Length: 283
Image 1 (cartoon, rainbow, N blue to C red):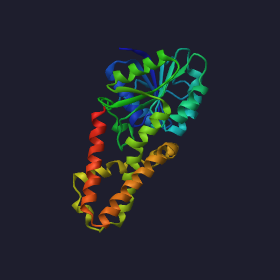
Image 2 (image 1 turned 45 degrees about the horizontal axis):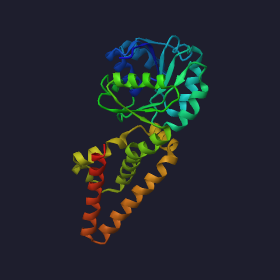
Image 3 (image 1 turned 90 degrees about the horizontal axis):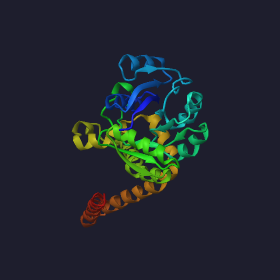
Image 4 (image 1 turned 120 degrees about the vertical axis):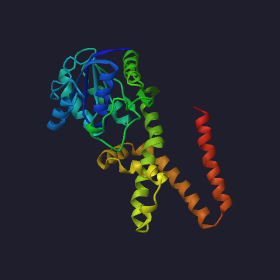
């Protein structure tokens, strides 16, 4: 197992704090340093042992051989500029951002010579966003996408980091990642949000009848509004085709149901089943 002498985690919400806990538990990092904007979170994450030590942005990366950016996507260039002065030669920078294109285009150009950036996206999380919900096992048996980069040795080290945290690493280009994650994560969120928004028109007693299926479907609609509004708009180009396809499929169902065409509805459901089975068998 690759072992990093010092891991710096920039951003101590759910994902950043879970990275810190998982790294400490696995032994992939000998020391974990953390930083965030909120002084109370700095105090609490150190008190709870989520990180070994907290510092400010300007010195969090001093002596670090791996830096994980775990802020919102739009904040990553700003915080990277703040931590760059502490980066030494041979250090690695990765992130947990769920849209990779803008980061792959922007972040490498902010780094000094001898420091490499490799993008990451662990496909794990929760509708909770606080360090209070952090778990050392959050990444176990999950997929983590690691983006292509010119420095093969740096990519291998980032692969090893996520594997030590329990994730199964898959490699993607930034563009392919953004297109695929639109389908498996971003559009499902849009559909859940849209349904939850429309549910305000439901009869007043309907919520009382809701069972596990309703709760499973609407759980992701409880995700943080500010975080997800950013993700969805940043990935808008990759999402355009998938949103259109889902809208067309809903329209097909609506027309068949309105026409009382049970055979067509059954055909649409059967086609949906076959699509999922075919996709599972290709994995």
